[in-house]
Image 1 (cartoon, rainbow, N blue to C red):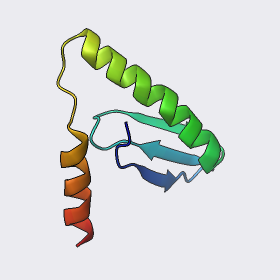
Image 2 (image 1 turned 135 degrees about the vertical axis):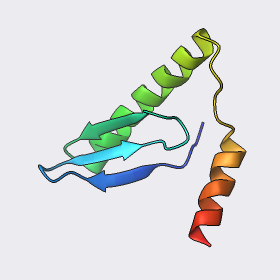
Image 3 (image 1 turned 135 degrees about the horizontal axis):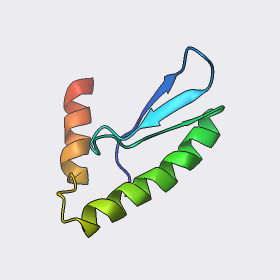
Image 4 (image 1 turned 60 degrees about the vertical axis):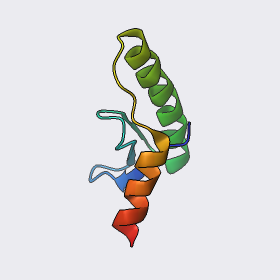
Length: 72
């Protein structure tokens, strides 16, 4: 699943990456590559846990449309 992501530098070094459509789904690493690798793991676990407990998972199409609206 390819949700839009945000990448932010940390004051203390490294980066934080998040999937805004999946509340609380974020990861951190020393490099962007490391952060993205960690995010894939966290995202998959987030979705697996949501499915296990019957929680709603944001629609990818709606998440992308929202980002496009913000960019316009």
